[in-house]
Image (cartoon, rainbow, N blue to C red; front, side, top):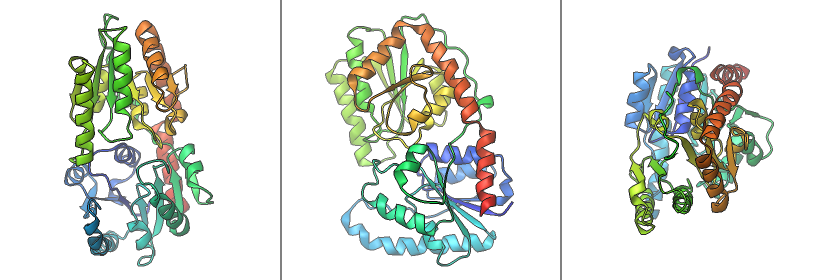
Length: 365
C-alpha cells in the first residue's frame, strides 16, 4: 500500500476523527501518517501507533486576525511538504471539506489528493461552502461523501463516491440496564454547539415531564472552550431552572468513554438542525439503544423510521414529545427497536465493508 497522510482539523475527539481512526486502524500503520492541530488528539493517535504531527490551526475569531491568515497558511504548508517528503507520501487524504491545505499541496507536490466531505451547506460554514466545494471539485483526484445527502448537496462531480462511516459492532457490548419501567433515562450525546439541537430536547423533555415526572435527561458534551458554546450551554442551564426541571437534568462534560455513558441510559436523542451523517446514531445502534432523531440529513440513512427508531421533523417539538411518550409508555418497544437498529446497522455499516471501500479509493488513484 502507498504511504498516506491524513489531515484532520479536529480540536477534540469528533465523529469524523473517530470514524477515520476506525476505518484506517485495520490498515498497515506503517503506511499511515496523521497531522492534527490538537495536542491531545496527537497524543491519542500516537498511543494507537500512528505517526502524528501537529500543525497550527487558524481560527478567525476577530476581524483583525485576517492579517495572520496568509502567514499561518504558509507555515502549515511548509510543515506539510516536509512531512510528505520525509515519509514519501503518495496520497493526501483531507478528513473534511474546510481544510484547504490539501488543495495547496497540489501546486507544490505530485501527490494524489482525496477529500472526505462531512458537511452540508446548511452547516456552520455558510457561504464559504461554495468556494471550498469549487476548489475541491477542481483539484482533488477523488471525493468521498459520508452520505447520500452530502453527495446530492455538494453538486455535480464525476470524482465522488459515497462511503458511510462505519463501526466495529462486534467489539462494542452494552450489558442490559436494570429498569423498573417507571423511570426512562434519555441521553443527548453532543458537544454544546448552536445548531446541535439541545434546546429542542430541553423543551420537549419539559413538556413530557408534565405527564411523566419520573423521567430523566442527561446532556453530555464539551464546549471546546469557545465563548459561543459556553454561552449556549449556560442558556440551557438557565432555561432548565426557569422551567423547574433542572433537578431532572444532568449536564455532564465531554468524556472519551461516551459509549459507556450511553449504556447507562434507555433512549438516545439527537435533534440537530443539520447532520451530514451522525456517529451518535451509529453508536446508539451498536449498543442496541433506540434513537429519536431529526430528519436533518444523514440520520435518515441510518434510522428506519418506526422500526429501528423514530425520525421527527426538524424543530418539531410536538413530534419529539410524541416519540418520547411512545417509548416511555412501551418499554418493550425500546428494547425491540434497539435490537432492530443493531441488526440493520451491523449489516449496512460494517467496518470490514468500510475499510474495503476506502482501500478501493486509495488504489484507484
